[in-house]
Image 1 (cartoon, rainbow, N blue to C red):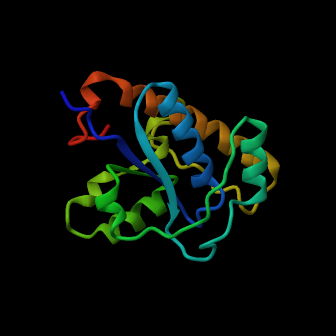
Image 2 (cartoon, rainbow, N blue to C red):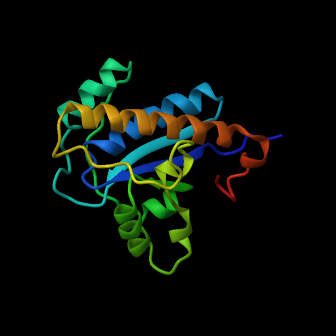
Image 3 (cartoon, rainbow, N blue to C red):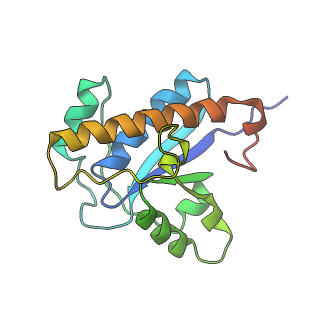
Length: 167
């Protein structure tokens, strides 16, 4: 019997420096804790921060919760739709931009909202904390942690092990 391919998940926000790097780290942690083999990355729909590290406030909130953010920002590209089983957008605007980039290939169906998995607010946006203070980053972390934990729980269920129909 062969092992199924790892679940491939991409976290997506606007600039790939605040929400999606934290979501990436949380998804990695929660999927590993749930015993789900996964490849997790993050990207942004915009190109303003390409090559830069995560926002220091995201780095700080992640560090205080035992996570390390080490990646560099990159922009979503069409190839990502072939490389990832699921793209988890932080808000409806980024989801719409991702679906537009996917075009009519059917890949747009691979885009979901991160908070589709938040038991407290399914389908809600993760507000962008960039223009706010530290409290916004803490709130963002809480939303992402709940969502990542529930996503991992669902991914670990036997009916979700087949990658042809991700979560």
